[in-house]
Image (cartoon, rainbow, N blue to C red; front, side, top):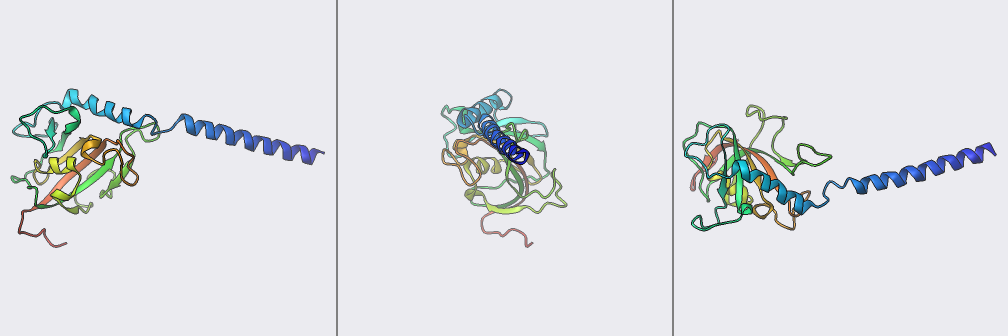
Length: 206
């Protein structure tokens, strides 16, 4: 009798645990109201990143950049801009153009959530927790093949610049998302531009 009673108690406990585990998962859905939360996140950036880019983007500068696809003489919604913060100012004097090739270190996060208070990392070339150019190996891209928000920022960056970008979903992967990136996701990029090769030239051999 005691044996059957013990089995019953164990089974009842397992069912109860499963019920509450399921209930807890539903209560703490990290992506609940995702579209609304991502829009609110960008709206919060407008107040301190809402000025146009200064002539010299020194360390600590915060500003916005209108998507390269849009006419700057017209008025656009806040979701048409990339919101930028200069983490480190580079020493380069040149910027890449639309058809150029570049190398840069990068890390991409989603917006902060309960389970990922700093934002879930969804892609990166970083091999260290913080940027270490002596260790990290930058990835190579054509400027015109990355998402619209990154292309926009790259065409204003100099070699050595290390920027944080807040990119609205419309300038990233839109309503459909991509891989581990849900639709309507604002992306938080860290980008350290390390090399530029203008059209007709090759990036340095690795």
